[in-house]
Image 1: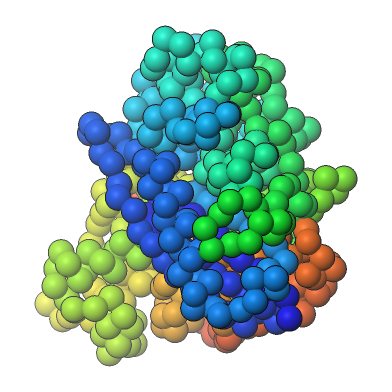
Image 2: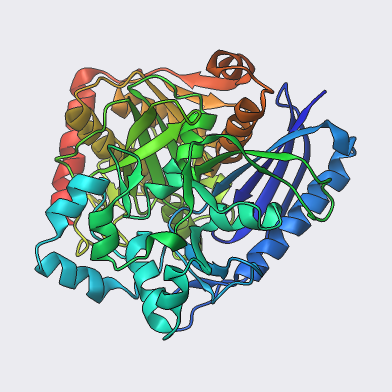
Length: 493
């Protein structure tokens, strides 16, 4: 029996899963690491702490798995996507702390580029909005921070990368400096159509090409392990994808029009658009989903995010004290048949796609003397689903494709009431997998394909396993009325 290791390197910690080729989970370990906030709006990570968390998680998962290390067929990596760092090519020593995707220190620099008229061209080339969220302006800031950095980067002495690049370098003992195209598409330096570093963008952000990683597909053998605690030398590192793209692959959303939603603190929706590079008129992002091998065409996706999903449940728990544990919201909301006219628009951090209203604020309206906390709880769950409905409507409009399937994962996907309402308001069947950690599963699938554990996507689909389906049962009249009430509330937020 062959085994695949999936390293899921996230914003607050690292999770390692060890799976056999039938997807039996034999080992799992999560290790958290500290967040660093040097100034308001700045967020950093210590790369050595990240590497330590990976080593500890690998050792813990291997200890639990109790498998023959010789059975390890491949390692896959999925990662927080836009977080950026520099390290010394020879010593692998980080040049400074990593700048995290949440960091806003380059907001003024991005605003200047917008004022100079670059936004439309950047959008056309990258599929992204000109925002500090992405890596290009972060790298420019790091190169400008110290007097010798740009010179060393231009000489190839410093390596730039997102977390996947850094982990491959560390796992391989410095043998490889690479990234996959899904992560590269989040740097704001990649030409989306050609899957190459773009000279215009490198010039715009003043980035020397010699510091950039080599571009690879999402599923091929990049390097082999060397000197990793608890792991034998020679294990192929064979799959990489950014976290949301990995979740799309882990959900086996292989056909154009198939989509997934990851319910976490926020909600992240990606729709497969196939080999067609999507263009959005609704403020959605265009991104590389994956590339299955160096000679394969790229697969693309539309992406939309709602800033608040599970965080709304946390607010009801911690801010209003309506229940003690987040899982209790389902039982509370089920005490009423509907929200009783109550609307909760969870715009606590503004509204994301497709509204893009940063000034919007959370709204609770439609209250009457008969409103109970059960109505508020139900309105919160429905508000999460209704935000997703807005994003999916924009995706269908932009792509010209009907929604073929909608798969769900993440913590809130376990909430049956929320999933049923999501199916009702989208008027599409919702499919929930048995394994909700689909981000790690996607990394495992990509690595297994790259190393020959599974021969093709058909074999991957054969081992992917669903838990439950939720069929829509709401009438069209009720759906229209519910959406009209929601839209009126959003306009007030």
